[in-house]
Length: 219
Image 1 (tube, one colour):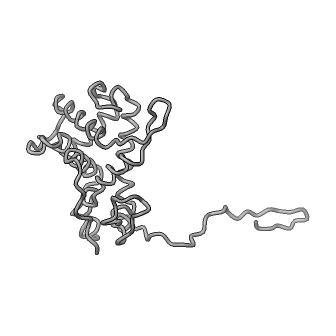
Image 2 (cartoon, rainbow, N blue to C red; image 1 turned 45 degrees about the vertical axis):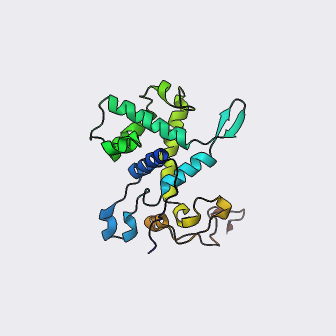
Image 3 (tube, rainbow, N blue to C red; image 1 turned 120 degrees about the horizontal axis):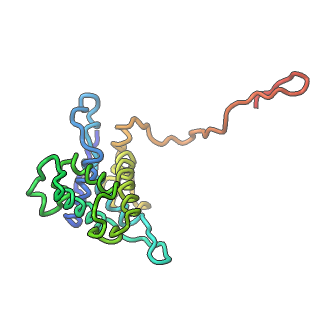
């Protein structure tokens, strides 16, 4: 059994802590499932999916600036959005669990319990925040805020069950330079056997056509 990736690349510690907290809340580790299969214990943070999210936000998303579609690094501003929402969440006394104060200096969002982090996402999705204090490009842009919250949820799960973590030491390189170093843990968790050349595509179902004269043919 191959271990989860180690040696997560150094980045802005505030951004890294915020995204680690995000993916940890969406796909947590589950030690209790070790009785079924050891690899089931790994959550998204164990597989460094926070790095995947940062990479995707900084390299793969395009937004409209003026009349042009532009690739704009979004990880820092997205982390800022999550932390700004966490400030409002705490100010409204909605936290059900006490924040972890030693972590507050790095990331207020990360200081919240996993359950409260999900509530912050819900608050953003429902636009129950002061949009005017969010960092650009989210400031006063509720449609983009909702779209990003949807992306964060969906892409975290996609990254966890993709082959990304199995790229190991090459995972932060460009896609053409990445190489699989072991069988993806997310694939094992989902019971996916992996890519097999020769899968036949469904071209349709057999249909019986009755011809004139009572004869029939299967097509």
